[in-house]
Length: 372
Image 1 (cartoon, helix red, strand yellow):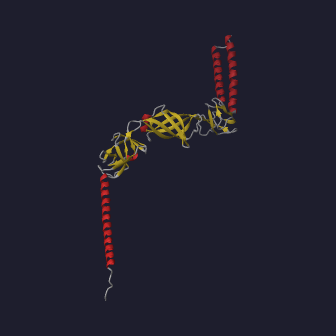
Image 2: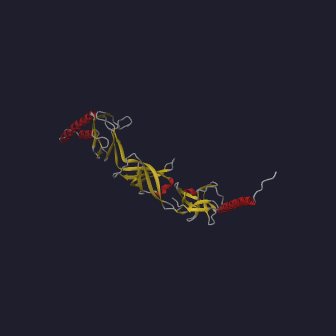
């Protein structure tokens, strides 16, 4: 069987196409090989340069720092008033929120027994005084002895003293304000039976509470490390959580002088004047103290590394190699840390590397990050 003859031109075309296909395949293989070689070279170059790391330059720490503390605002003075004589509450002249002056009568107690005792002492004193004067007259005429005259004088003096005591007891029927302030609580109404609270206040009914709130005592507790830097007169700014942007100036007024044995904290009192202040006695407050600080070196907190049970930083040396240095931390605010030793101002430190890099590993420092 004879095969059909293929034209010579078509044969040449097939050969040319086949040759082109071989060239394309060969070119693709060569290009792929070259690309792989370039990628391999790039990886080797990158490995030789080391991993990219963020860095920060150590700077001198500020000699002033802020300490934020939580505390409680209390009235400068606060007292709960009780009755010193038993009886019935006759009048209640003030109520919660009323402003009062020192010595102002706030309530009146009706005590028939105390009133009767006063009148009896008054009558007795008057009688003893008349008797004493009569005996003195008789003594001048030699009708009585000196002893009788002295006895009458003594009895008159004692009855006068008893009258003064009863007068003082009678005065206790009026409940007076001990200082200028504000009535912050009222516990009884007219007609209530009140008991003498001299011996025990447990069973006695309180009448009123009066507070001096034109000034406040702010109580905060200082950590032991902050105690050496706080003195009487240290300036403070105070705010409440509801209005953190409204700051009220105050000063440290008193320091207890002894750390709490359990917490190792120091009770500190801040004096705050209440000039149009929105802080109410009993409020929780935030107090910021501006304290001096010891010299140190400052870095971002993520520069810290715990390695071999030691606190270290990853120093980047001039050859861009990691060199671990042990450091001593003075303060750590969570964002930045102050170091006492281990590195110098101007040293470059890697951030966030942890223990992932071996000593003398070469790295590529990225843009420096300043401490926040």
